[in-house]
Image 1 (spheres, rainbow, N blue to C red):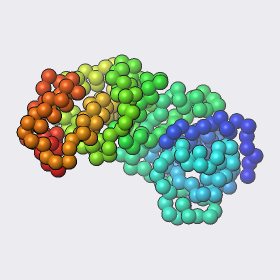
Image 2 (image 1 turned 180 degrees about the horizontal axis):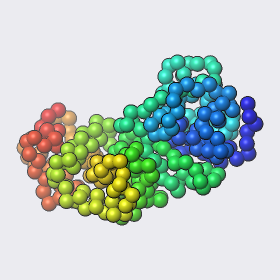
Image 3 (image 1 turned 180 degrees about the vertical axis):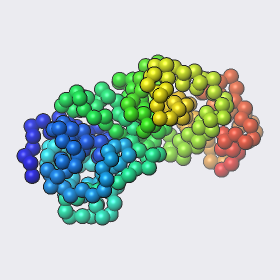
Image 4 (image 1 turned 90 degrees about the vertical axis):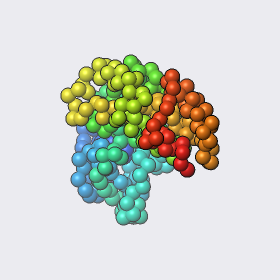
Length: 290
């Protein structure tokens, strides 16, 4: 095995960074490919390494131990920092130093990390992008409140400048008590429907999208419309607000009077003059069914 280079310690993983992303950045610091680094550590890899975010790499315990020795990062620290997905059984129980590259479904792919945070954890400024998974208890988006960068789709090869939208940073900073998974799922589904069907908050979201695309002109010629790829960012504050409000619903159905009071309160939280969902609106369905 190669001796540990003195600079290895300075290539640190970001929280929730995918293992493929960290391995790629680590190898690039020594002008190597990920495959060459694995070979140098005598780790046998299978699968096709197309690189993050489209593929992830799963390491056996022995492979993790060797990577830990190379980077001088304790195995437990590496496990806490890198992706949450458990390895396949054949890798997780293997005694040999093995690794497997596996494709990642688009909806589960990590997102581009803040460039300033990535540089801070790398020994050189010319480093590959880092790819990290969003927190599971928040809307699917990454928001760096310190450097005002964000991403909500893996097709964004670089994070977006969100200095024009301070409400995104404010929403992330005030999310001290994340909503439950059930309420977040409902809220995401509801705001996605509202967004796609131009309901309730359409004018606000349209203005927000225009500001985001004006600040990030590279979005326009991208592989997909910013209307789609930026949706989770555009609706981020309202999704969190709605999810928090849904968490406060009682377990029993609301009476008509309670429904009216709840909608009045929610409209105030969403900064709307009124909120009167139609019978087919998903919000109304959530209020009237248990």
